[in-house]
Image (cartoon, rainbow, N blue to C red):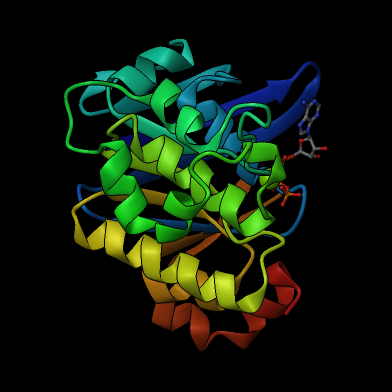
Length: 229
Ligand SMILES: Nc1ncnc2c1ncn2[C@@H]1O[C@H](COP(=O)(O)OP(=O)(O)OP(=O)(O)O)[C@@H](O)[C@H]1O
Ligand SMILES: [Mg+2]
């Protein structure tokens, strides 16, 4: 589904991603963990094309999309849930969904509202006025409206109350069961480990450790050194 091959990404002179390689297979969920400022969002931005890598390749569904504008990646089936939600605050919940609609897939407003019943209750509210948890659900629902095959989730539980974190875990697991491929950036370790098949730990723009979720659960040294736990 996705192959990231030795990418190097900069902001001006600032050398952030220093040779990242990873793959996400069809139907697989892969987690990216790491402390603040380690390059997780930059990795997501490099993949979708907001900040293209200066070196290396991003291969999506067999096509080399390195340097493509992000709308091409979305058109090809890549969906993004950006960090910090970024819903359109002055549009209603339902308008946020309809503007994202891309034809050719199975997700409709009705389907995403079945997944997030709270959004149905809030349909006519302005997105900027609903709760943080509801905005996060809307951000995921909006990404689903583009009918993605690969979903990039950048810290979907950030700032959410424990109950909503659990609900988010349930939704992500549900999407995975439906066959979606997922790249999940998370700082909530229990949540990440409960849904992913494989994890990579990012530190200062490099992958410093990769393993199965169970192996990380038991590795106190790695958790202490790279996640500050
Ligand atoms: N637009 C930008 N211009 C310049 N430097 C940036 C920009 N965005 C991020 N950086 C820097 O790049 C590095 C990686 O940032 P990034 O946002 O990818 O980290 P992150 O792992 O997503 O952090 P967080 O967990 O806080 O979201 C940091 O040192 C950050 O200061
Ligand atoms: Mg980030």
